[in-house]
Amino acid sequence: MTPRLIVTDLDGTLLGADHDLHPTTIDTLRALAGQGHHLAFASGRHFQDMQRFRERLGIPVHVISTNGAYLHDTEGRLITARHLEASLARQLIALPRPAEVRLNLYHEHEWLIDAEAPGLLALHAHTGFGYRVADPEELDGEGVGKVLYIGEPDAVRRLEATIRARHGERLHLTWSLATSLEIMAEGVNKGTALAALLERLGLGPEACLAFGDNLNDTEMLALAGEAHVMANAHPELADRVPGARRIGHHDERAVAATLRERFGVSTT
Image: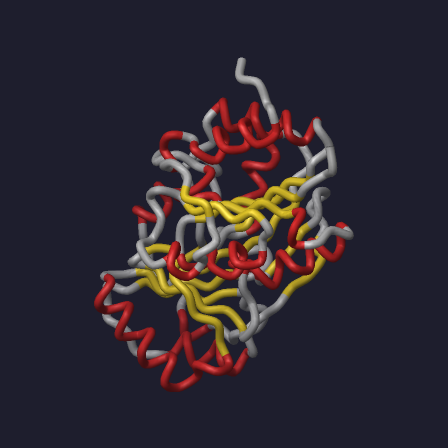
């Protein structure tokens, strides 16, 4: 069987509603690695966060993190890094925002936030990865892979409109949740990172299977030869990737079920 690259988003896609890997999913991915296929995680999460899942699997997995700002190989070595211009990052840091909207910065080795947000830590309970609270006035904007605003959807959408009007052509804006606006440098997304990984592996897009559930998966799914959209996906995603196959719900382990059927992996 010709080796394929299987790339999947995490939250809302590969992970269940508990934001963790199910044993069936773990067994499926291990079996696919045993067949010689390449595996990759692609998420808005921080690399250090995603690496905890890879360590639990115990198999080679490439990691596209921070929505494509960073690409790491199966040994955890950094292959590519794309940062926001420091001047733009500083303007985003200083942008007025409602008090309840949290400002987050993802650097290569750290996740910074402007105030405590216990609810966010709960989402990362299975990895133990967490943020460090930092005073925005002390941040210089250097080495920022992503700026992330999290808050009430209407408030965050107003921020999006302001940012697009001021800097739209110099940034890539997308959404990972209705409450989460993700901002990277122009041209940075999961799709461009996936293209770099395919080139590194010597594979064409036709050899790639991709799975996703939200708008930040659009470019990745559009590039892949076999694209799959979850039943729980953002309602606009299927329209953005009209050739994608609709599969089941993430909490029913639909990615694992699809891969077992596609590659003849037996259940135990």
